[in-house]
Image 1 (spheres, helix red, strand yellow):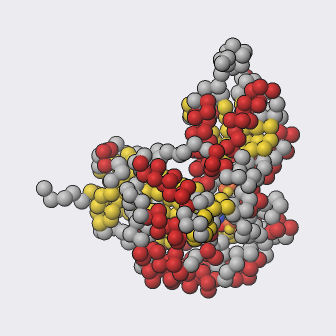
Image 2 (cartoon, helix red, strand yellow):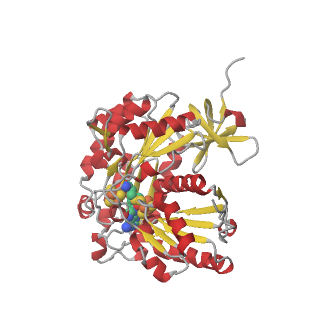
Image 3 (spheres, protein in one colour):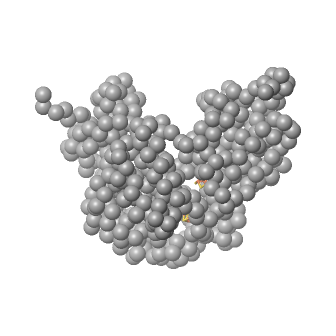
Length: 453
Ligand code: SAH
Ligand code: SF4
Ligand code: F3S
């Protein structure tokens, strides 16, 4: 075989990936890195300046996503001018949405791909190197990209597995159904074998991922369709698994069995992120969320009946078209009533191609800002109160890594709060009792409770 130098082709040795967006994108980026390592022996580097292949994995869920991509690309253009042989690729949800428009605006981009085509990266890169062409591939193939990717490996005590992708819910504000496509679930055996691999690599915690993870409907080993709760029970039984989590859930896919699982599966941690977006029935309808506020509150009651200590978090949008003071008051009321431990709060921004974008974005920006600040203020109080409640308790902490202060270790409580304490690097991967001594804005401090000698 001819080497790159004999073919007079510059060799490619290094890879840089810039990732925006959700955990699915983080997962996809790590799969891309593994694929490129496997195919080309590429080494992952920490900055685009050092890389021969530079990829951006983009997100288009909120405001100015496209602009952020183009301004980052502006910086990468300079690298390409200096080193014309580098390969620049844009993938992810902006890639899917914009397609060839990206190369029209930024002709130095070699590849545009979507969330469903990144397994074709090596093929695309080969063609580019052979034919010096620009490529776009934003198909949504029926076949599973997962079948074409190398088996993933865990990098720490906590591993992630995408079990389903896409979204069929079509909330009126959201681009995800258009960028990620329809809901597709992976077969149960594939999920279990990926989990087993992570556990063999030393992970003790697994987080199952999906845009509507609890909408999972995959083919079971018995040939029947398994729902999410059935899958949870099967994963929980895997040898070596100590902690199980999942994200993101949709209220419409919460079943009584899933709520009960929080009381029945010891490995399933008492924490749930359950986005509600607004507390106003009128807006829930306009957003096409499929449920009203009473239903959401009923689900919360049910969860707490099975798991009284469950910590809850959510996503909120303020300033959806037509949102009145009364609608917003309903949101504030719901937040206090549920008592979320934390939440992500966003100002509404119209996204291209979504139904809500055809309505006028008529809540003035000052009003959106004021509502956002009020909501964030309330959430800060709730978060502080939730952390303060832990002081004095002894909790099981999964030690994840060294803390920032020398001598400190960092880990998480069952309900997903960050704890710092004095410890040893060899404790990484262990679950240890820690007595909580202080609460800060976003985290806890504690000390190891050591067994009597
Ligand atoms: N599948 C998940 C989350 C998807 S996106 C779910 O259904 O809950 C993550 C969050 O981004 C959403 O929950 C929503 O709060 C926010 N978001 C989505 N589109 C938005 C938009 N157009 N403007 C502002 N926030 C938005
Ligand atoms: Fe977007 Fe709604 Fe689907 Fe979540 S459920 S990804 S908010 S359309
Ligand atoms: Fe963003 Fe796509 Fe995830 S739009 S939030 S990267 S699914």
